[in-house]
Length: 342
Image 1 (cartoon, rainbow, N blue to C red):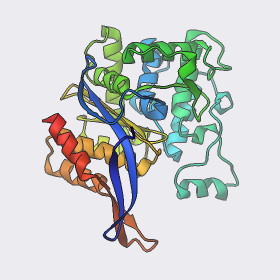
Image 2: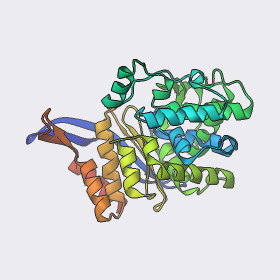
Image 3: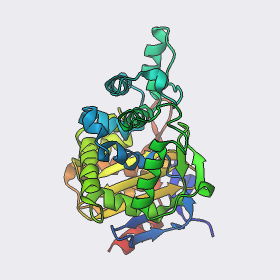
Image 4: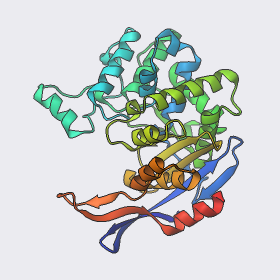
């Protein structure tokens, strides 16, 4: 059975496009408090789980050994714009480990924003691994490898000690077995493992609260959570959903997007984690889905309400910035959330 339509795209008074998807909201025991669509189907989380992948960096003591700042730990969890501030922070992370951009195995990527790409072009430069949206994560992997005393080459391979540590953490947090038959290769060349949305929602409930985690892991999760909250610009950058939400909610919410329409979140005050997937991979729809979930779950002050309203109903603009339509949640989606969340 197909997942339900959760997001409509209108032009004028006509619905032009529709996006199907699924949403799981779970507590730290793994119990679902909200389930929409098929939350048992395995999905690749892509970059939505970078904060969990950063746990070995902190748990091992590598973050302390390398004297990583909150901004650098936040960058280790980032899918950033490739702005100068992001590339420079990744460079410093590598320098602290005695490494350079040549050690990155994530591949080059043009910055997300035209103005940042233009700076490179005007300087007669081309993008390198530092501009890759995953460069902070990779700098963290390399720093962990260096402190572990293992070869930094091939750190992206599934059999490398760094990736084995990351896989073990993911299995422990999700409660899922991550075997080779559910393994793919992410865009930045590291392994990515498909799990049910319910498993990711459970993992993020635990990440945001520390409940059910051993003391060292709970402390490490709190440190990463706080770093991202303290330095939300490093997680994404100018104009980005994750940065805007974490700036606006000041510690109440951790959110992280991933490619192909995946989103995860932690809501510590409720003890819940959220994982969702837009079936067709559209970011415009996954952002509306996540904003709609947050609006349904949280009591909001005026500033928070205004922020979420702009994210729940983003306009479709013409080239002259005239509103021609909206991306908006389906009324049935909103009703389902309200019914299941009480």
